[in-house]
Image (cartoon, rainbow, N blue to C red; front, side, top):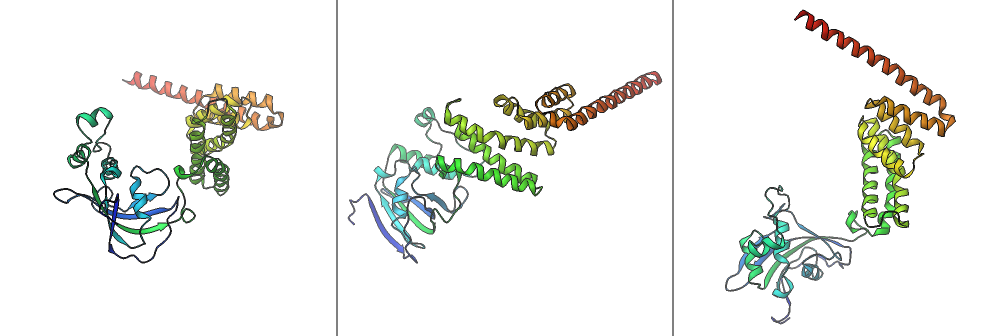
Length: 324
């Protein structure tokens, strides 16, 4: 390969075996970045910046520095090679470097950059600012550690297509149901929460009331009810009320939502609202009359107990004041 080529490769250490790297493959590698010019200057070393961990790159997902996808495809596992890359292909490197350097740092230490500060102050690193203002060729020394194909690892949410995310929702719901049946309530809540997060992400993409939005909302409602039940068991009553309100906004006669909201109102001591939900539920479903009557009787007893407690507290207060 001639020196005028956009990428010039030189093998430093031969690899163990070559594995085809395709779209969706996850590639792990360490790298050093050298600035080329009158002097060869080390810019970054993945073993020393950010989390000091190998770079992980998923191919085919429009990574800012596309040349890295190109060069790792030329390598074997265990190989260490130098790649001299023309400046036209590495214009995005300073921004990638900034992100990698700041991985694992607290937000207070992260140097935030907007278009205005980019022109006036740069991106917060003198060496990277110089590459932006005076572009130059870069040399990457890369050690390819491991390659996993798309069917060999659990893909992260951002890697899934829209349809794959939709298909995942009922799977997570069933996982939550199973864990709930095993009385693993925290784990069940986590599974429901993950499913709800996918629903929210998908619904943001659609216009409220459109067919696609309605279809996803119909998937969301029973999961939200299950999630509310987990919260009810943990005594997070106001969260339960909020989630049941959401359900009832779209299904005003949803019996589970009414019952769970009533129980939450009892827990939060909103007896009037609890009675209102229970009476409405009784009107909708006469078969629940026995259960509802017990709940209403329970509220009645709790009111009496609270009245007595308040009287005792008031009496104590007067006795204390009288003694003083």
